[in-house]
Length: 254
Image 1 (cartoon, helix red, strand yellow):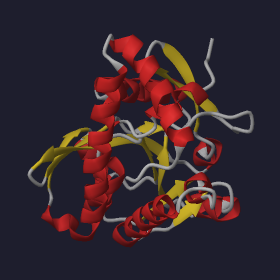
Image 2: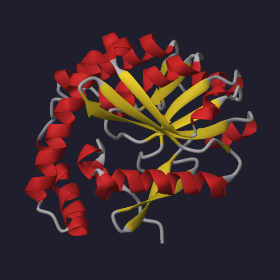
Image 3: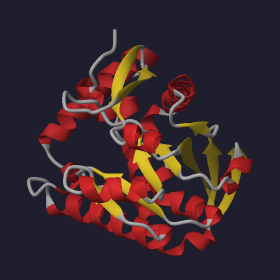
């Protein structure tokens, strides 16, 4: 992915400082590995036009894919999850909508950045049979999709803000960091089940899909347990976490 501006680099270094302290690794090593992973991930986004070429291995709660209940897919911005999730949607054989933030298409960003995210969103929609909503603009459409009990793909690792309607936390790098999953109350209302998912590129056209347990959206203890598992996965490969430069932005939970 192309990189925005000096502010991005400043946040990249601040995030690397926190991770370096946690792992006792150098900032340079963290940043270098992250930039390499981002380069690979950008290439994988371009490959979304030929997903049939990828060999996918499924591990975890694979048997739950056939459960007919509406699914809230919770993902972290890690490894090849966004680029290759359409393969999971195809295996489940139902359309999947997605929610993204309009921050990634803000006009203040350089146009290569905006084009990258637009292209990724368009290809995601084309290969999942769903729609991509902007959280800040399409609230009514998102709620209508939930009322229709459509599968939805939503990040679990966005920093919570004072305006967040619902917040859980991720235990990351020595601190509990508040995250926003704003549609959760509506998912609870409409009888959704929640499942975490991550996709990891193994090289040579092969990838591994890791499926978490399928839990009732109203069971917050089980949901927090699944988030804890995902946090451990992020910590195991911090250089492949797309949002690590935002670490200073996460509110800390006492």
